Image 1 (tube, rainbow, N blue to C red):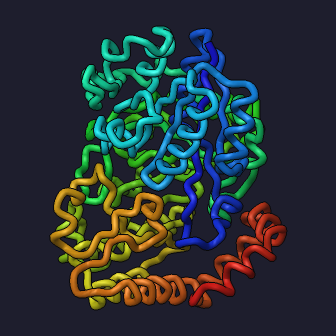
Image 2 (image 1 turned 60 degrees about the horizontal axis):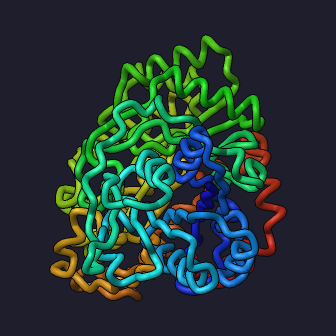
Length: 473
């Protein structure tokens, strides 16, 4: 038995422009690698093709696979990459119809069994966490799928149906570390966002699954609303392995809520210090969890940057979409992080339902007033699994073009606004934030704080200049 996993790229970054993002920000497909690791642990041969690291057209990729076909191919697809994944599956079925095709990931979990009705080249969907479902499918020779929980398959009438709900994995420590060894270009081809790390090689990790909050724009269809996590001991051993086997010196904990369980974080910091593990890290936190004691723990254990989802500077807009945290308190919390010796990154959205130009300008002015080292501004995208998706057309115009649904294109236009307006405000946000002396000085200091970023920036300067010429920033 041999299983190939494919991580499709998706073809639209900024509406047809060349995608330069993966040059400067490429994280390994960790969940797919976790599934591959469990299969390998159980004696099943696995391979991984990450199309972000090795971009190939579907035609070239299919020729390569058809020359040495596996028994099954598992695709992990977001909404924006699903159609490219399907093109690969369809071409493969034309050449090697005996290959079993399985699609998992966020898009399969949110749309569910009806995908099978419209996309005949897919044999099965994995709904929910994929580790045990894929293992049981492989052990069954990819037959009798209707008896395996967590699989969407076709019934006797050819309609897509779900076999049964798969229970969530109770103890994440039971899973092996992701199959980094199956990425031929790891770690040299993978890199965190420029200026978001002090050293290289670096990579990302996930140490928990789920989130207890219910923000309107978040898709929780894969890991659900609960909160499960790896133990501090497991996390430290994971870090040790990455450092020992791959030379990793910095990681980004890509958990939605790394700091949610305070005792876990405290024990992790304590263990990491005791082991003398010289690996720095970034994490994502919620403002509600931050206080002086926690920040001291993070800093002492090697935390370099903390990211916060702020989203909007308009209290009325925020109140409609997430648990509200007083905007007057945000700056004080962020300043505490800075004073503790860590960088601060703010995460914002533009184009949320209910926003107008005045609300977006309030967000821009608010972001400029905060003690932030950098921002990440995304274009609001109503994903099928998000709570807001069901009523999104009541709040504006929605072009449900899956390939453009990657948070880098305005597919939703709030009522009373235009796409031109949104694009102009988005560009203004980026320009006004980064075209300030304080930000310029901050990046100047990165010459010695993040030398690898500077080298990467200079090596790809032609691509950066070509991209900048097309922007209005």
